[in-house]
Amino acid sequence: MVVPNSSRIAPWRQTYWDWRAAGNFIFGGTGTGTLIYAAVVPGAPPVLGPLGAAFVLCGLLCVWFEIGRPWRALNVFRRPRSSWMSREALIAPWLIATGMLALVPRLAELRVLAGVLALAYLYCQARMLNAARGIPAWRHPRAVPLMVVTGLAEGAGVGVLVGTLAPPAIVAAAWLAWPLAGLIALRIAAVVAYRGGLQRDGAPQRLLRELSREAPKRLIVDACALVAALAQFVWPRGTVPIDVAAVLAVAAGWWWKHTIVVRLSYNQGFALPLTPVRGAGVSGPGARPGW
Image (cartoon, rainbow, N blue to C red; front, top):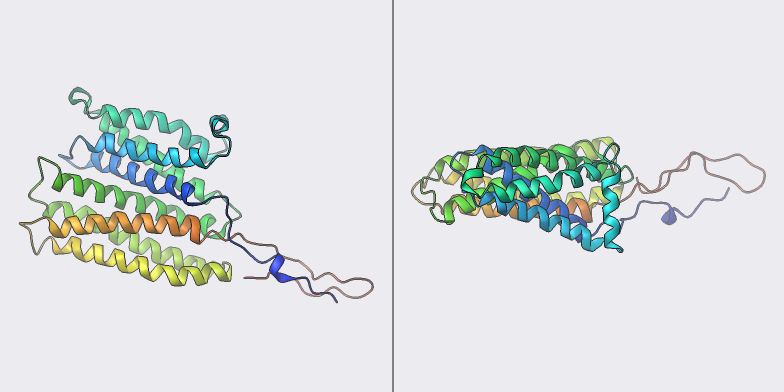
């Protein structure tokens, strides 16, 4: 019986989506989260609209720079019925336009529409990653809520920073700690569920080892952000705790997305239903190297 070389069929890390692809999820999630925050939080600074739109535009530019023949990107609009990427692309112009126009005083109501479009865009991004069926870390169903809640937490972090630092600053920042702390706690729960789901449902060994090394670091940052947000209730007169929590919430979200898109992007490799033999003989058992 001839045993095939498992190194040629075991999972390996894909290289097609690099930091530029991660940038689309990083900036797109932060931008949409910022627009959603501006739509639902009373008294949110008007500048959050164009700021969120600018983040989304930066994410799209990252993808555009990744394409070898950039003008072929227009083909993305052709398949909205079957592609989450096409749906994301069709929403993007309206999202950016409403976000920018929300800065105009007479058009302030557009921030609600921008928030609805931002939620749809964020969901499309999460489903677009999940639709990559050949990457176990992306296709797991728990990756969708993780990407959504991460974008919301990042947007809340940006909203809090702008609200406390940009004039006119919101001095009473204690009430801002509630939504930020809640979203950070939800992200911690989503990360734990995502990691547990991959371990329970099966994933390449290299992916699980990478996740075991990286997840504790990200969870520590999120835990520090949560503690800082809750510390705002102990120090209600200042904004230092909530600002620290906001910075950590955004940084941890960016770090998480880069990890998922780039570091955990091992494909599933190849599985052999039966081990082949050369000449006469009986086939051996199947094999799934690397799992």
